[in-house]
Image 1 (spheres, rainbow, N blue to C red):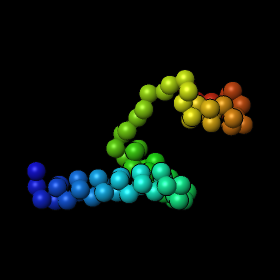
Image 2: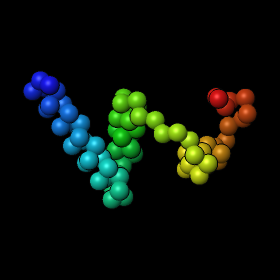
Image 3: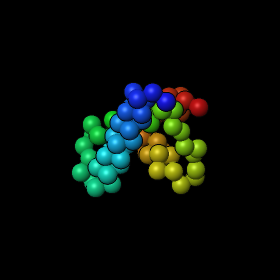
Image 4: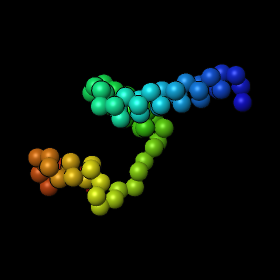
Length: 71
């Protein structure tokens, strides 16, 4: 691994730790959530859906028509 790769790995680790701490503290702003969301997306991080998933509950509350839903 090159020195640059080691630096980038450490940077990503520190960013993830800082974001997690901020989210857990309750002091995160919308922009912090957006950074965390984008970081997960950029790293292709996916969590399989579970019945008690908070995201599922959120989507059930959103005012979408059945035609608007994407499978």
